[in-house]
Image (cartoon, rainbow, N blue to C red; front, side, top):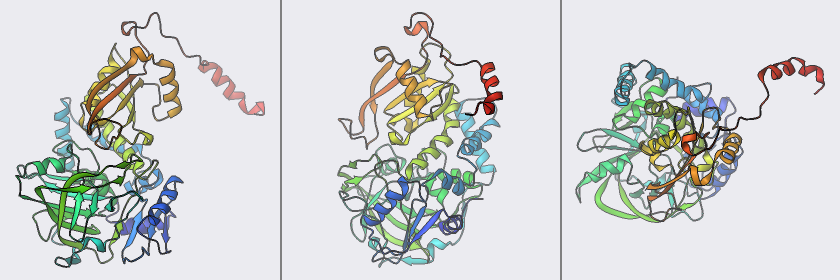
Length: 479
């Protein structure tokens, strides 16, 4: 069973020597970031800063910073179990289209009592602030010297489609401007931005921000789910219990009842303000740009509220494991449309969208190119800047194997595809924001029809019989 709230997770991790309490008074400007950055890059523990200077609330960072901790938080033995959990649900579905299977997956989740559950009250409303609500009383970090201000980095932003009533949870950073306003950084492709576009100028769209619900629900706000699947349903599936929701004080939205802080407010169509710069997960500052303004109406919180933050920057950082969770969870869904795919690796060095290594069971000429184009047409995979396709036997999780086959199997003039399309809004290399070029590289063995004369050479490897014979006498060789 997963943890219901951060307090439970902290107690468990501390008992298992996976969390350290920092009693030294440290500033929320830079100091906590520098400590966190050093610990993350060494694969160290989660950090609970008990005395942020000038604030009464503790600050939690690096909760997701290692594979071992991810497994503890998700109640699994290894990260591959996430893939198996989704695959197991899909295996029960009868043959049919991708959308048939997806609908059955949704039905299975609902039937399994994973649908969110409404409750009348919850810990997140133990304290209610309205007129005296002040965003500056929360120990929001200023991470990097070039940042435009203090940024909430793990906000679970909740909106609702005004036409369908469908809820969305997204993670869009928020820059604190003053006591009552903040910048809301959602890109044009995101669901929250899609909801907002349906409001005419001057109209107010309710927005609620949960900070620090249970660890799995926080992750699910980052998950690139297909339209129609509630992120809270995914959380219930991964938690193996429904997320409890409580109605907000000032609007008709619901929020996880175990949240640490809840910011209730709205954004007004047509109103924007400059947000940024921000030291982002790409390792570079994203620039100043206009984004919607969040207006605060109320803050509700737990009596023992802890501010949950992450520090992003030059990888590897804590978010590498959030990306790996997404990679494992969504591989079975990708295989629904592309069953020839064996594995995918979105390496942290590629910041999740710059590099994609994929292995396939190649069956016909042009198969690698078909897979490239199909991936670019799948949801947020459209942001993949470079896709490298390998044969099935290549372990794409092993960068040594990836580089070997990339170097040995590719003829650049024949095997590289370049085209234009949407790119991640944080990609500073593209000349136009959100639009640029992509590259696909066919790293597979080539067929005659693909322009390779003769037969592709075989690898020089020993026979299994010899390997077994040497295995049997290995201990006698004194090596």
